Length: 254
Image (cartoon, rainbow, N blue to C red):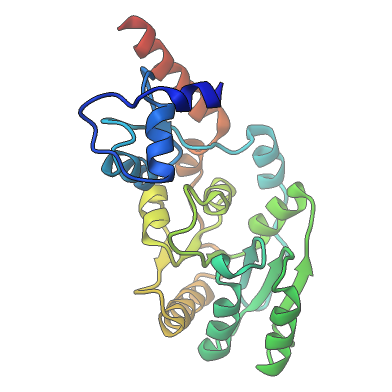
């Protein structure tokens, strides 16, 4: 089906990009509706001529899992807990995160969940910077345990920039009540919940500065600085499914 769609000429009048953008333009040529999982990616599709108008239907998070994990009590702690989840690869900027932790010298416990090509370098960098007393690599975990780690944390740290079409972990964290320290302004703007923190730019020093700010604020709130339940409701899969059904009904009605 994709091969047949690719053979069709793109609809007239669109300013087509090259490469992948042209391929996507050809795939959507006969579509009555085009959707994307985030506002910033929808804008990119429109800017490159993939479609004149792209609706936003976010990838939601599992209602039952979120309800189960959110109901669990959070563990006691003496200082804020930060969590990072993802594939340990260059585009995720995990080494930059470790370097920022070294610069920040923030009084927080940090756990990294995941694995990848940079795992060995991450572990060595933690040792080289003398961070082993407060930065721990937990490795890969099942999905429900990853959600539990986000629920228990005082903040998630999201470090990739310009790579994610949506960036799901901050959505999962927010649905569980956990705020995020953002590096990517597009993801922060799409999610648009409070509290949150955003690095001023892509530098390690900017990430270190925002980590210091977040930990200082979290330390003063005694673990009570959380995303409200009402904000999390709009991120659930049931909410996003209802939004998609409404779009289908709009297309059928027209």
